[in-house]
Length: 414
Ligand SMILES: [Fe+2]
Ligand SMILES: [Fe+2]
Image (cartoon, rainbow, N blue to C red; front, top):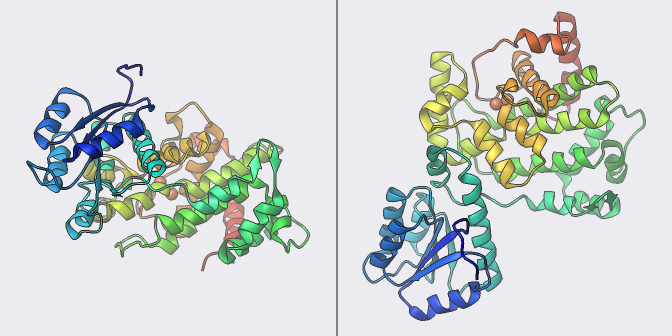
């Protein structure tokens, strides 16, 4: 096996030599630099000498309790990902360690070879992605469980697209299994926004009318809402229903803006819609994983009458734009979505995808000015003159946008 500095470094700690030998046999062909030790003393020496990306440890160790050990790692090497590989996966203190962010995943023993490898691959990918961000951001991300996998319903629908070929029949079957998603798709397909003049009454027709880009991303957005925000606690100043309405209005306005700018480029109209729908995804990450801090950021922004991103940065060293783009990148979403999520408050900060980002920036602010839902942000910001001109905005144009958007989203959001 060829060794180089770029190889991810993994440290395995287990009191039983046999376990370490089995792990070594299993991972022999992987391009990883692995260290196998049987005590915390040895593990700390390796951690001191090497920049370890991932620690996989048992809980029962000869010289220190495993929970204490991962807590030590978190304090000394906060950007290292930590996991338990243990027979005591259901024990209360282990579950508590996960909830408190001491460990980011628990793999039960005996493990399933393929599953173990996949989890390690996934953790290493997260580690690589984290390193592109500031040390503070890495610490923050390492205080929550490993990021969730891409929603299954979205993966299913995506699996029906191979190159330019789309298996609409199978895609429609997947979608038909979900009543909420089916009815949302039929609504959008019949809305004036997508220029449909005839009744669309089946999912197959809806897929044809909307196009697979829109369909797959509407499903993604719906799944994100369920998976990430499924168990959202009560957060003062952040109402999930209003957040959804804000996202939909931003999507609709983005599409209308792009249409006025580039009337014949329907692919760009669709992309603007999709990006608008997902632009604030990071707020769901913040609301779910950093609930207390997020609530505090909202409250402080309201009190100071300043943008939420300012207080977010003050309280947890990042903002929902960075958190959302991190998750979007983790899910390998298309680059234009990642760019919109990351730059929707500062459209001039990147030279790429400028039209779509500009549309999302303006749509986000208009949606707020028009009182379509709310997004946790209470500071009304002016749209800069450059962008008002870009999209030919004036009082009359705003009124048209407002009415069109209201008509489109009324039936979907109550
Ligand atoms: Fe935002
Ligand atoms: Fe927003």
